[in-house]
Length: 391
Image (tube, one colour):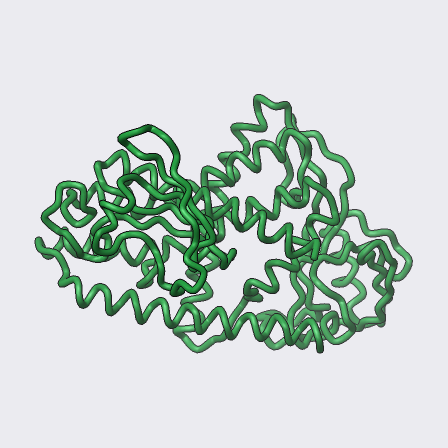
């Protein structure tokens, strides 16, 4: 229950930031926003401000309403003369309903479809922008109080470090480490009784002792565990040096003075966006080339588990995880895939190139098919995450 509550709170924060980006840019661009909803319908309740009286009006949910119920259909402008802020029963997500976003009322001045291409583009990508900015704020706060950071490549002289350790970032499938039960996130303590202080020390020990059996001591969930491993040649490697099949990193709790932390937070957010975007491109390329997934992919269940674990480790770990999720949400949404913000932006770019709008029926068909494929992917990954929990 703790994990579920924390996950819903984090997800709601990310979604509110994302949808607020669409909402505020649409309003500033002169577009009518019918509804700003947290969660997905059916609606629990909502509020809107009556423009005549200046008072807020409470709106009850309809109980047996359809899952497709949102404001914006025929008669909506009379029933809801101002934006309805709603809370809906399905908590995993949120939405902003903008007038004309699906091609309706194209001649109305306050319709999405009647705006210039650059305004529509700004509204479409505003959610992604807000998620990156939110990550910058989170990381800025994190750097003030101290957050776990990869220091393998070193840090600048103004950084304050504590709790330095060597962590296992990734374990290759079928490797000696994987077969023995080593997992990503394990803290390396020693190899054959020799304390490991840096990832370079770990790698050098394995390379100079690649022909012997070795005992790896790690800490996992505050418990010490030992694994007996023998380096071997991996199918994915290009040299002939036996390996254990782990990717290491030097980490520490890193902090800065507040006036540097704010700047560093935004720099890290934009850098993280570039890195994660590159990883997604690599994953997509490998799938197209038939090379499989080079990285583990998690769905809602796996992400919820990660959030819950971070929360138990401390607020600084939770802030770091929330920032990473915000950046990941931004990267996923900017991909030029139908039904995502990037897909909608892609159609606007095509419109500018061919000098005319893409017929709305074709664009809607593409977004519908894209949404179905995305939901199918979520179901598959979620089933895999649940399988990993119980097997």
